[in-house]
Amino acid sequence: MRVFVTGASGHIGSAVVPELLSAGHEVVGLARSDASATALERAGAAVHRGDLDDLAGLAEAAAAADGVIHLAFKHEAMLSGEMESAAAADLRAIETIGEALADTDRPFVITGGTALLSMSGVEGRAGTEEDAFDGPGRIASENAAIALAERGVRSSAVRLPPTVHSSLDRHGFVPALIGMARERGVSGYLGDGANRWPAVHTLDAAHLYLLALEDAAPGSRLHAVDDEGVPFKQIAEAIGRGLGLPVQEIEPEAAAEHFSFLARFVAIDNPASSARTRETLDWAPTHPDLLADLAEDHYFEPVPAQS
Image (cartoon, rainbow, N blue to C red; front, side):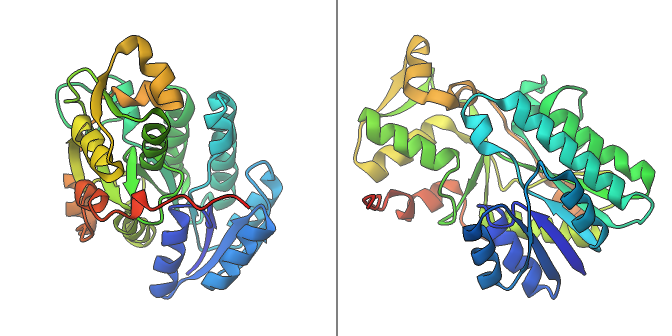
């Protein structure tokens, strides 16, 4: 299968591309820079130059593919506070690719997040693949992709947890929390720290994208979740051990200062189940869970000095 992958040189993409190639698929990766193009070529993938704003290019690459995996997102815009514009670009890209794949029965796998469940009102239980809501932002993107099943596209959405961890993770939530702890001299949590974050190893998530591409039913919502919910205090304690720093509760009024752009996420209680995903796609995570991965120390290696 010829697979067009957006975000192919990013954190998740750097695991998905070799997963696809190992399974015998041909990969064409979207690259917006020379560095990304070089990384893809070294991995054995072909390169399509462009970005999420090049809608004509996205349509062309999707039409020429046997399937599409959409991983790209304007993370820089999100981190700078422009979440609305980043989400709008994501929705436009999904609509454009979906239009190119309409009436072909080809697979189209997009990326969502379990955190949206807790933000949409799921409380007191683990969120499931059956949970779905109307809403703006990435919720609208997920719903648009799922709706493509009615237009002859074998669409599915892989919901990633807030923590996708591994030695490939350089810019996710865990490295951000580690950086904040280093800078503040303390690893923090809010309240009693009992709120839970689900988690998955990058390589297990990559395998789920492959399974979704090959076998997911049209309109499937899938959960890339290994740890159903790790108490946030335990994450803070693991970071404290890794850095040799104290661990302490951060007062609510200091949350924004301590946690910066993560302040709105740190307090969420987001347990999530992947029971249906495991059953329908025979997905079985095999790599270390979050706390075991944090104990391996790769997250805490000295940061190289900038030349």
